[in-house]
Length: 466
Image (cartoon, rainbow, N blue to C red; front, side, top):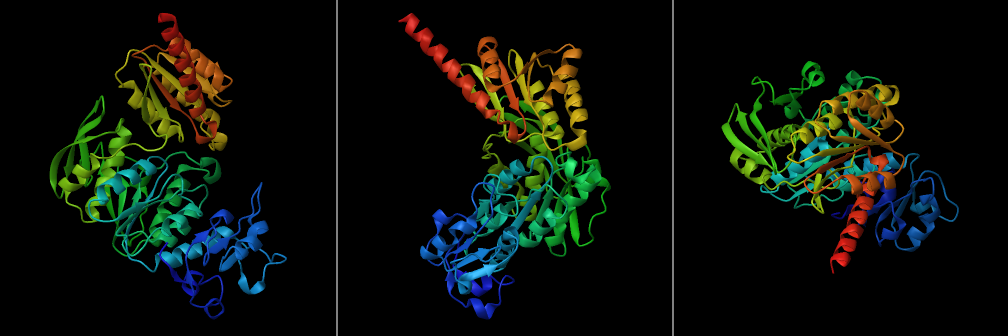
């Protein structure tokens, strides 16, 4: 964080004359990170209440503490009262961001926003110093933290924006003020909170509220909700597609290969290019198209953008490819919803291997649509060349029931040990296993247990051969 005056950073939370112009070194919500001159923001939590650490933060050198309510022993003259700690973080994030002028790309959507963000950051890094949202820092706490990483040398910032409820993207956008916006698609994520895909579409379009007049908004032409949406007049739509040549950027001749996807990119403004990306599945072609559009709008030459995007690699637990004693593991455990499940199965159907095992866990936060969505997933499994389906979770039982009725060999596991035990016995070199479920299902635990069993078996075979 580049040091700025406290009265600028805290504007809107307290009168400027009260705060003064002393420099702030850091904004933190963790009392262990407190350094002299910082602002400590207290968050009430289920297990720990930051207010209990406010006095210690001041003793350790914090210049100010932001509290929801007065705390005994904490001097009033060092306290900024704000009833909502998230609001305080957003206000400070917006104040801080306003001191600098990087080109900001905001990315949202029901599926693919993180991968699209990574594609964007990879492409733009050739133009200048680029920061991006790290991990899952895409909410009203994480987004300000990302903005605090901007300094005078930052030329581009790729900011991911997530949501659970209407109004959240609006607040994130007004804080980050993106120069370019991307909406990847409208799915069923959080439909339990928003009620319909039409409402989800409206919520995603809130990204426009922080964008300036004439700003490009990158949109997926293949998404019926985006295509039919009433767009705000102050943004300029730029469309990408894998099905229609009416879009500004169009992909055709799409082919899945061992190490990624190849396709022909037709840019109405700049011509045609052959492209290869190191990510599997048609859905990743769509993510790459969105990032390409953003990079071009940001000023990058097409060939330079595509050259940079070749350097893209998947991050975190998104479609990681692991060779586990000859069995290919596709670790896609970061999140899941009906759209991303469908995309993963379409990719897996084309994956070159002897047999396909799919470990599918619950898709969470679907509300009353949960049962129907999991049953539909069972029908998709039956069409996806899956040799064995292993399900995990109460909702996933519906997937197992439907898939089994359609002739798929199906096992329902009650815990990670059952998943690992079955695969250790059944999967052989040359086979592939797809692991996918919502973050809350933590399927990576099953992968760790499977790896441990395979390692133990390999050691035993080695000792016997000796």
